Length: 360
Image 1 (cartoon, one colour):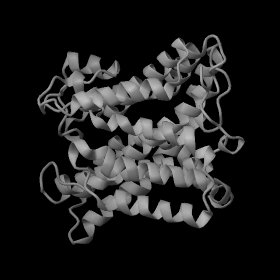
Image 2 (cartoon, rainbow, N blue to C red):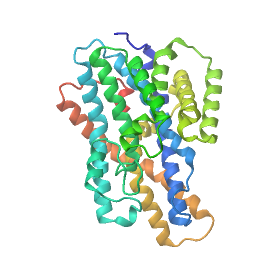
Image 3 (cartoon, rainbow, N blue to C red):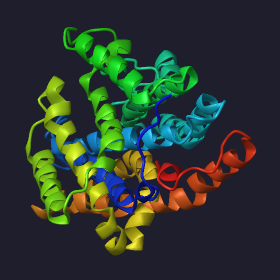
């Protein structure tokens, strides 16, 4: 089986760690602005800063890159597919199930904090199993709404594992599968069955990351050129609209430019990124999963204080952006890291991960 190209300098990605934190913070900003609009400004649902959700596109490209590097390092192992799946399940599933269970408990105990969640047995089960399903409002979202991205992640992991099992290049198998699915999805009506959400073109962003892993080691960009590409990607992702089905081109390609340039600049960024930002990158999964619990709490608290003035919405967003990372580090330190380490030790098939993968 052809092995993914790799390079010794790609074994540690401090730049990607910082980028994970930034991507998660972008998602927090989107939800914080939505909370402010709905709870503090009375604008109703649907008003938010949409470009903040482009953090998801950055995550998908990073995931494609890291999974390609990880799979490439395992191709010679007889039980590579099993090891890969066990590793990914340990990393992703327990914390997601904990967050989902907490969301269900919160809805039952404090329904005022969850304005758009209706609990139904079938929907709850599909949420735990990473199966796309429509919620009570007709949207294809799990109980923990940010979990929609994890449905795509788990689907991606399954295909990579399949490639390892049949000893095929993951880039080729995933590229053919995702390209075909995206083509099918372009012809589907908006009201297609929920399970067909796997045909959304956003899945192509995993391939962008895999392509970076395959071909970037062959490219040596001057730091100034990589920095210019980074600026172009950042400006594009912060200013362009996602254009619905064309999202991979309007946000996915800029996300790929950002990820690729950050990797190219690793020699520079690795020396100047502060340690606190690396720690925030370690906690980015906890930040992504648990900020939806803190954001509405900030809104409820500010509403009860009856503060007046144009500064209140900005204060709400600022509090979310400051408090969410603090909460995430606490959860990562006290729960996520100990739990993950424990499960890895209990699993005979979970070898020591690459530095980048251990934080993916």
